[in-house]
Image 1 (cartoon, rainbow, N blue to C red):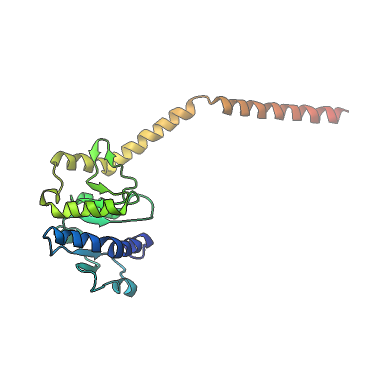
Image 2: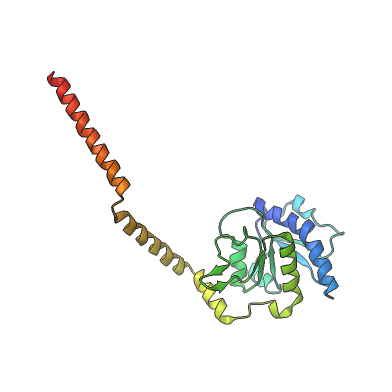
Amino acid sequence: MGNFKHAPNRDAVHFLQYQLWPHINVALRGHGNKNCECHIYGAYMDAKMKRLKNPSIIGFHMKGRVDDVFSTVEAYRVLLAPLRFGAGVKGKILDAISMELPIITTPIGGEGLSVHLDGVDFPGHVAKTIEEFKHSAVQYLSAPALSRWEFPAQKVELKERLDIEYGIRCVDHVNKMLQRKNSIMNPIKVMLEQNSQLAHRNLSKYIQLKNEG
């Protein structure tokens, strides 16, 4: 899922198609899952992206834009998001969380969402290597018991952590901490201010004496 005008998304699709999915698919077929497919959704899928459809790569399909991503993704079992660069919290990750869809991603994909959010486990896996990513994808897709979040309490707590009101409370808390910190006299700041005042007094005295002389 993603906007294909965004370079990190285009790179992730290339990476997934040529370096990850072929190995994942072979492993799944070895587990008896011969019908597993990888579908790529996103707006602005230009001709260059559509040409990525390669018959030699089994089960990899470029689907393009959909009107309702939430109803579309309901049928899927895991989000594969092998992002290699980019910054900030990723919309596709938040969408997957809201749909209770397990996520296999990279440290870049999980940026802004700690692997342990106040004690809440990340809903999926943050893979640091290619092999780890492939192994996690095969594990989630091979085990139906792992296809959705297992603990209702985890869903509620994690969603609360991502709620906008919770974010506002966190920002307000940090702001109050900074205000308290700034109210404490900083010895270096005080020293610099005193030296500045002394320099101004000496300069004024010098000008006065010069004018008198």
